[in-house]
Length: 135
Image (tube, rainbow, N blue to C red; front, top):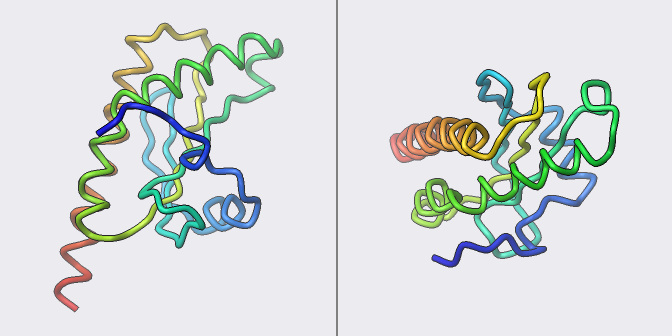
C-alpha cells in the first residue's frame, strides 16, 4: 500500500461532513477525537479524512496549520490499519480528526494518538462487520 494522502482521500463534501457531524460516532483520547460514520463516498477510496484544530485554542493560523500538517502526516503513515479491514468488507468511511489539546504537540505524541484512534476504529469496523454478517 502506498503511503500517500491524495486529494481523493480528503473529505471535502459539505453534505457528507454534515452527516458525519450529526450521526457520527466518536472515539475520544486525550487531545484527539476521532469522529466516524459509514457512508457512500463519491470516490473509490475506503476512507476520506478531515483534520481540524480549534481556532479558540490556537489563535495563530501558523500554529493550527502545523498541528494539521502533523496530523495528516501521522494519519498518512498509519492509514493502512483501517484501509485493510474496510477493503475486505467493501465499506466506506468518513473520518474526522479533531485536535483538542491545549499545547502545541510534537510528532511522536500525535503519532501515538492517531495510532490509538485508528486501532479503536479498526475494532469498531470488525465488530460492525461481524454484526452485519450475523443478520
